[in-house]
Amino acid sequence: MPHVDLPKSGQPHVVVQPANEQKIADVDPDLIIDLYKAHGAILFRGFGIDVVDFGGFSKQFCSTSVVNESPGRAPVDPAANVHTVDRGTTAFALHPELSREPWKPDVAFFGCLAAPSRGGQTVICDGVAMVHHMPEALRRLMEPRRLLYIKPTWPSLLKYWLGTSNPTDAQIAAPPPQCPYFFRRYPDTGIVRVFTRPALHKPMFIDAPAFGNFLLFARFNHGRPDHPVLDDGHPMPESWLQAIKATGDRLSVEIGWRPGDVLMLDNTRFLHGRTEIIDPGERLILTYFGYLNFAIPNPEEPVNPIWRREDFEPPLRPDHPRYQELPGD
Image 1 (cartoon, rainbow, N blue to C red):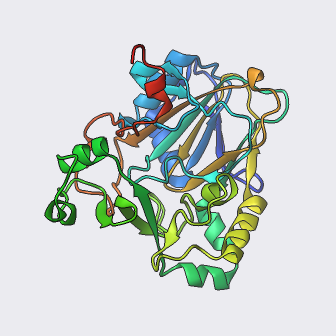
Image 2 (image 1 turned 90 degrees about the vertical axis):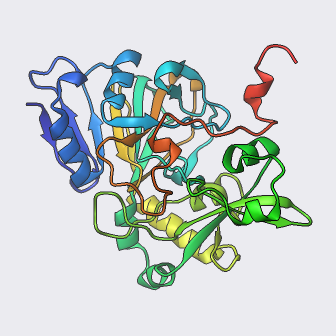
């Protein structure tokens, strides 16, 4: 039985360390699932994982996984869908992984192969605690609201979801039931794809509202207050964003990485970010983003969506850097 240190003030996550276990795979998975459901964040420390250990440990809890197609991530074990984090150096605002898409994963795994001596710490924050501690007036304003994610399309994406790269108005108006978007055609912008989620949502394993979306990352990393927008089409007011950020900053906790650490986050409950990276050559963090084999699927998802049936890689934009890396034309 491993040593288990439950969350406490200043530590929103469980810490699991070996007792008689030799490897992380020796820890009882039922114990891990119980801790995960109850607390949403677990740091495994002292097990000395490598790439194979990390991939095998992550996959035992997941039926399928998803590729984060954003540039800057390098494959480490592509067959197991293990990649690095973004290899830039900027600090990242709080966000759940891939919350900009309708296939936001259930769980995010991070594994440390090389720890930075300074800077580059992963930051975590409980989205349920954020709602509890945000100003009451703001919480009441947000509770009935929804967010709209409005994004462009391109021919191969339309073909992937609608079966044709040049859909008719009738096809745009009635996408297949397993398509996660609805579509609109506009004279100036062409066809856009849209999905919507509550501004405050219910996580998978706790009956309480949580904050967890792309708002803070879009505003404070991309400088975009207009993605997502509120359900009336207007950007979220700057005063709301600043109050949410202030609440998250107060509640955030840094994970001081040690080589061999693994962090398991409920991506429907916890947000994560990072501090500025001082020396990127010191830091090597692995990632795996998956869909749990004990999941309670989000009722806002399509029924039996493709990402819960098979490992999923979304269609890439024609100008995606990955195409520039391919040999030939």
